Length: 221
Image (tube, rainbow, N blue to C red):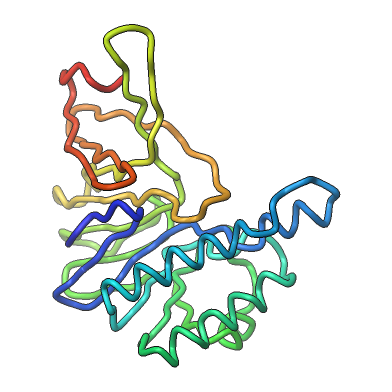
């Protein structure tokens, strides 16, 4: 599996592209409340996903929860049109793994062109939305989102920089491993995580994924 600087995971052997936490419709929701949010935020997110799909040519695009942030609004229909165009261009399945913000009935998402599941399993890999989700018994690679992980890098002085990251840790299920993806959406916050013992962070820059940073490296605060 490849960790991509576009804040996505590419499982090349299976043709599966994974992204998490787009939080589409959040900007439209805030604008309806009178807050000044640029109306192009969702278009930027979907444009970046289109570029990624064109580069990887996946058979399946897997959304690991929180695809939408709010109740249905104009952004939902914009996504439906976007997905229709991607399917016409060759994208196979589009699967939504339910997250805490994905509260609509299955039929609503299916009308947009999505398949909806609570967890997605392929070989020894299980995908859910939250790191705390209950996994099947046995050794698993667990891929999830929800946290919007970020790493704070400390310079030689007092300078610091916070960047999105992939966070790898143990699942606690017979020493299985968990990989938490950064948020793909442009209009999302970040939660700082640390590379504690038994975990690693892979920092995302505009051009590459760097790491792993390890405890005691002196480069992460």
